[in-house]
Image 1 (cartoon, chains in turn orange, yellow):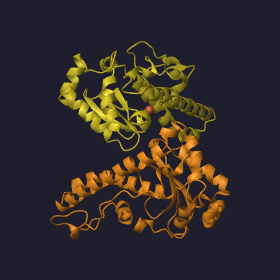
Image 2 (spheres, rainbow over the protein chains, first blue to last red):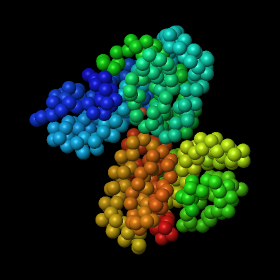
Image 3 (tube, protein in one colour):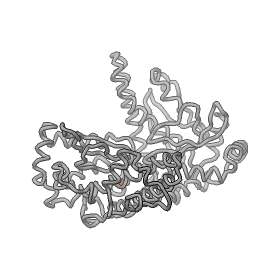
Image 4 (tube, chains in turn blue, brown):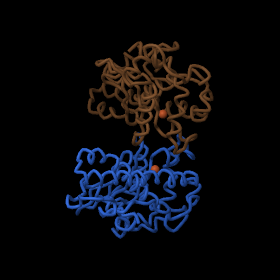
Length: 240
Length: 233
Ligand SMILES: [Fe+2]
Ligand SMILES: [Fe+2]
């Protein structure tokens, strides 16, 4: 099981380990952390064609995402050992590796679930009545939102992600944010959906034509998942 | 020359006009400019000439599409800055700074990159000799150690970026630096040899196996260019 909620908190506070947990023979399990595993996709590799090719999906999931999972586990094991050894310098040195690979794991896990085969019930805006209403209220129209979100994606300089988030707290407004490399959205904001703008997400099919990728991704956004996250009914953070 | 581009922004248009970067072999990056406009430099080899280490398709897209986009973005940023300057709108000029850094850096980095590569059948590959070899041995221990350290640096880039062999002008020593995205090498560092670690540089051929690309590219490094940059630095 991927305990993504724990990882989330871990990345959010950057110092999650209790001193009471230091001691002999520590490992991820004893630290209350499960070794992370690659989640299965909720659809087949070719299910997002023609908008995202099966070849991209397979490499993206079985190679890229898998590498983030493996490197996250490795870094966490080293971190556990550094805690056990009261080696704070090593703990600090590992933080960026944990952030990068942990972020990669979180981001891709969210991404797979906020995609669905084009033409399915999930990709119909009918599945997100509450969210669409809030989007129209915020941006003055759904097309205006789409334009703003697409512009944010295409404005990224280098690798990164674009997200629609619901701000934490009482305001709970919607916002478009971008994060660089594998930085995850942390700190109380709720991710509604995200789009991977690393070149590996589209290059084999779209080459340098990333605008076409961005245009087509709208066909495979899972609005049902987005609505669940918007309504706070998603259990991904504890159960993914 | 080209590495000072971003530090001369106020005088940029004039400076670019006067720069007249020479196209002779071994010259510094042929970041060529026409009437103050950056233009895409020609490659000194065919797109297929770096095969099998870098495919012709990658080279063609990389040069005609990616590099061209940086050239266009740089010219557009410069124009916006010039217009803002003429109106005294320095706030507007300042907001363009990230675009200038990104596209200007992209143009500089790729111009340097093309010139520090060459077909394996010509100058590409092998090991440096002479003063450059001596400096690498002194500062890294050996060429092999240097190569390993550069590959480790490349593999460690989290996201898009570049790794460079640089000369530190103040210390006089060689070193390795990485830069995120298209940030150009600047400050005390003179770029001698760069490797593009963006996914577009290898993905069509190597997919996620970037370590294979980092191994293969040594077969097409143009040490003559690197030595010439070293001697001029
Ligand atoms: Fe990705
Ligand atoms: Fe590039």
